[in-house]
Image (cartoon, rainbow, N blue to C red; front, side, top):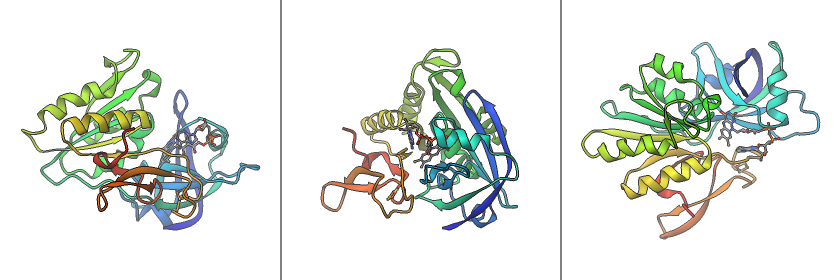
Amino acid sequence: METGKAEIVLNEHIKSDYYKVIFNAPHIAGFVLPGQFVHVQVAGLRDRILRRPFSICDVTETGLLTIVYKIVGEGTKVLSELKVGASCDLLGPLGTPYSLPKDDEYPVIAAGGYGSAATYILAKLSKKKGILLIGAKTEDDLILIDDYKKLGFDVKVATEDGSVGIEGFVTLLLQDFFQNSKNSKMKFYGCGPNPMMIAIAKMASKYEINVELSLDHAMCCGIGACYACVVKVKDNDNDSWKFARTCREGPVFSSDSIYLG
Ligand SMILES: Cc1cc2nc3c(=O)[nH]c(=O)nc-3n(C[C@H](O)[C@H](O)[C@H](O)COP(=O)(O)OP(=O)(O)OC[C@H]3O[C@@H](n4cnc5c(N)ncnc54)[C@H](O)[C@@H]3O)c2cc1C
Ligand code: FES
């Protein structure tokens, strides 16, 4: 884990409320594993001192680090207004990563919103190219589809309003793969809003399948010190429950360890 200033080399609008920022961050980019995040001190956020966590969408060998973000509040709004040449302090890479599929395993990734940014490096590094099942409220929240296609991934879409793909939740698409998983080698991953992650974990438990899910939780320190980000998970040693830090033991948890309510 490193910290240091990183200069913005691109900060552009993708669509609707989504943006892409690329930092020159050689102090972090060379060490990133799939599903890890950076904690960003957004420059110019005067009265808000906390960093904001963002999944690392992509890195290059030359030290560039990409984040894809949605404007939801003050921090992301100010980030979207930063110009090329501005710098933010980046702390990372942080968090427990996804594990890569074995060479003969077919990766099935279920993502929603900016979740598809968190799984992009995983897709890039997977030997066997698989499928992205992407779920969204409307067409506005479908991002990075072409980027996955360029990697050789198939893409299937579910929107709640039926504007693109099938009408309904991403779990509708996932169900077919869960049903067929006994006959073929598949490895399952997910990232998206927590209600989507819980729905996937519940369905996975019915099929006795394990899915690596990345959970979203508000964070303070990002490095395991403050316990602001705890979630309830199984304590297999004691056959009971315990609290785990999303920033340290997570954000990636196995679906069979998550508390389903
Ligand atoms: C591990 C991790 C990876 C993430 N990756 C990405 C990413 O790749 N792209 C991206 O756009 N965002 C990502 N997020 C969410 C991002 O951190 C928040 O959207 C951001 O901190 C909001 O900052 P803000 O100042 O704009 O909003 P704030 O003013 O802090 O909050 C605005 C609204 O957003 C809600 N909010 C704040 N943080 C979160 C959160 N973590 N989850 C859900 N709602 C939240 C608040 O409750 C409030 O309603 C990630 C979060 C985590 C924990
Ligand atoms: S944010 Fe402080 S322990 Fe996770």
